[in-house]
Length: 90
Image 1 (cartoon, helix red, strand yellow):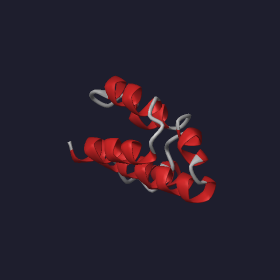
Image 2 (cartoon, helix red, strand yellow; image 1 turned 60 degrees about the vertical axis):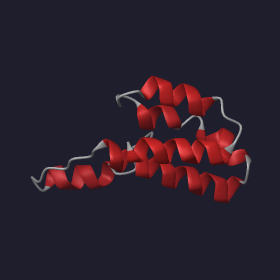
Image 3 (spheres, rainbow, N blue to C red; image 1 turned 45 degrees about the vertical axis):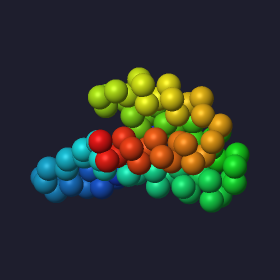
Image 4 (tube, helix red, strand yellow; image 1 turned 90 degrees about the vertical axis):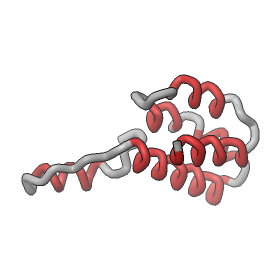
């Protein structure tokens, strides 16, 4: 499932009759972790591979369009990481 690595936990919670709430901070922390894993596995090419996942992570968030526009065109992994961290702490 694109940009929802917590989906299995969510389904298990719902099956057990428990609520499962995911907020923007949690989603952005997952995106940041995913980005770091992509860089660790693919090296600098991981930045470009992560771009296809980014829109799914930020969809529906406030200022998602701005964030997506800025991070999708960046060629600097540090800039993307800082953008995700800034959004996480906003």
